[in-house]
Structures are given as structure tokens and as C-alpha cells.
Image (cartoon, rainbow, N blue to C red):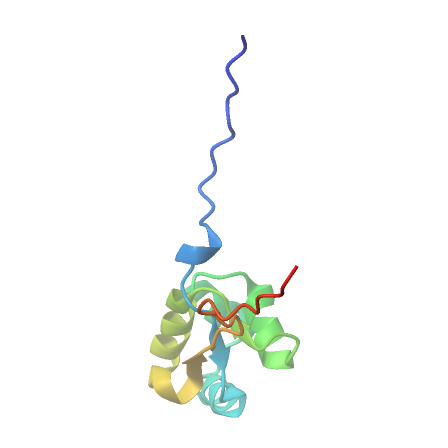
Length: 105
């Protein structure tokens, strides 16, 4: 009998993932970046994310970031309060509480 070895990953399960943070004030972020003379690449380096993440946020190709820490670092770099720039995404999954219809056989 052969023992199966399962592949271990560092990937988190969906249930334990933190909330996605949505960018709610892209204009405020763009204005602060312009005032400070920061490029997308420089902000990405500070926020410890890929430059494409910031590019996509600024160009509207994506509406938020998956890691709340990235959102915190972006706000910290620009000196903006987190609640002004980002908001947690509300889950679209609806939990049903046993309201299943029973049909007679």
C-alpha cells in the first residue's frame, strides 16, 4: 500500500483571507501623488507591491487591492487617512440559515 503525499502550500484558504480593500477616492490619491512628485513605481516600492498593481489602480483597470496591508502602506505614503481612500469590500456571498423548501415525494 502506497502512502499519498499531499502537496503543501503557503497559500491561504478562502475562509481566512482578509477583506479586499476597494479604492473609493482615486482622485485624492492621484492628487497627492502629483503634489509629492511620486510615480506609480515609487509608490509601489513603498507599498511593497508590484508596479502593475498601482498602474491598474490609477488607470481604473482594477477597483481595489487584495491585501489590506498594501492599502495601509499606500495611505501611509501619501499621508491620507485610510477611511478616505479605501473601504473594505462587502462580501456578495449570502449565508442561508436552513430555509430550504421541502417537497413532498
